[in-house]
Amino acid sequence: MGSLYQESPPLLLQDLKVTINESTLIFPSDETSERKSMFLSNVDQILNFDVQTVHFFRSNKDFPPEMVSEKLRRALVKAMDAYEFLAGRLRVDPSSGRLDVDCNGAGAGFVTGESEYTLEELGDLVYPNPAFAQLVTSQLKSLRKDDQPLFAFQMTSFKCGGFAMGISTNHTTFDGLSFKTFLENLASLLNEKPLSTPPCNDRSLLKARTPPSVTFPHHELVKFQDCETTTVFEATSQHLDFKIFKLSSDQINKLKERASETSSGYVRVSGFNVVTALVWRCKALSVTSEKEEEEANLERESTILYAVDIRGRLNPELPPSYTGNAVLTAYAKAKCKALLEEPFGRIVEIVGEGAKRITDEYARSAIDWGELYKGFPHGEVLVSSWWKLGFAEVEYPWGKPKYSCPVVYHRKDIVLLFPDIDGDSKGVYVLAALPSKEMTKFQHWFEDTLC
Image (cartoon, rainbow, N blue to C red; front, top):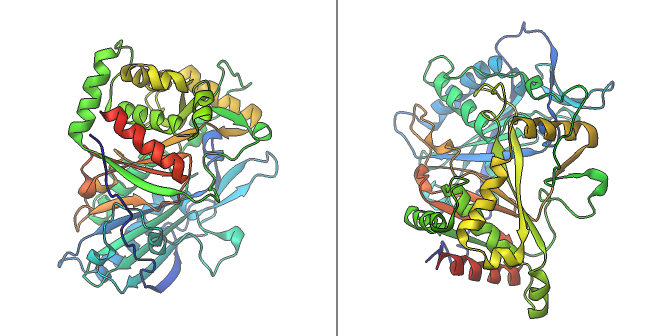
């Protein structure tokens, strides 16, 4: 049976008592590089918001925080020679009306601070603490709003000698996989080695065709002017209950075995697909709590969204080192009645069909759709998976992170998948934030599906 990771939230530190010691800009070491603009694809265009991650490290007597801070500063300066856009600024091209990056060498943020707590005193790192935002800097107070860096790095030391690397990146700069590659390259520079994977910064590889040609219906996308409700990316003013559900590797394997019993074999029964199918069933069936509403809800169509890496799906394939957002939104839709009554293997198949749908032509059609109509992904629930990105597997000179996680801001229609502590990617934590009545139903269906 599935289990709540914690029946009630732990007592979280609301103030990490961080003192900022330095807040400055750092610049690429190659000051002779030519100023230029970097094209942003239609996928990049809709992701103009910051993503904040925190990477926690235990103390290492050979690498005191002061030494680590200086090594990081030097390595980041070198990294920006290859990732020159990180020192640039977003702007709107007046001729096209599109966002691009002005690679003007204006600099990235570099901040150092210290907390009055030990790493141990922060408590359970798996449980998302809003106070972790104090470990990340997105805005430099010394700069105008229109001159904020696309990349800012904060190094915060703890009393025990441990520390946190807090990184804020505008999502136009990286997707999850390219950010992992950036961290690996940073680790190589810290180890005084060449870049492990020199980046490909050519975003025109995902440029729309001329003329654009939309050859598929794109139920996962909605035009800006046609959307009457908030998007899955927006926060809500509703009070939300927040709970974490843990699935062990054994439980995931049992779900895969159960799905395989009724699957046609058309799609792969993967760990991600079975967990996403479980989340979808629970979320769709939790929407209402009154009996008469439940009956009407069964006839309602539910749509789930999730990201799919398209690097290997295009023809020709994108380089694995492509730095931009090489992900598209896959969708699966079904009536709630089907999610209630169909065998679990069938629900897993519907989920998997979403990714299978994304071929080279489908991906090009979606990019062309963005060129013609301007819009964004839209559905009932988005599964955002940090499960197997592998941030905690990166080997720095002082060791691997104890834990790596995004700074979480609760979203009613986004369910997050996180890895276990110390980078164990076999089990997964499911993080959901819902109104109280819906959370009760979500938990019921979670346990029902696992049984």
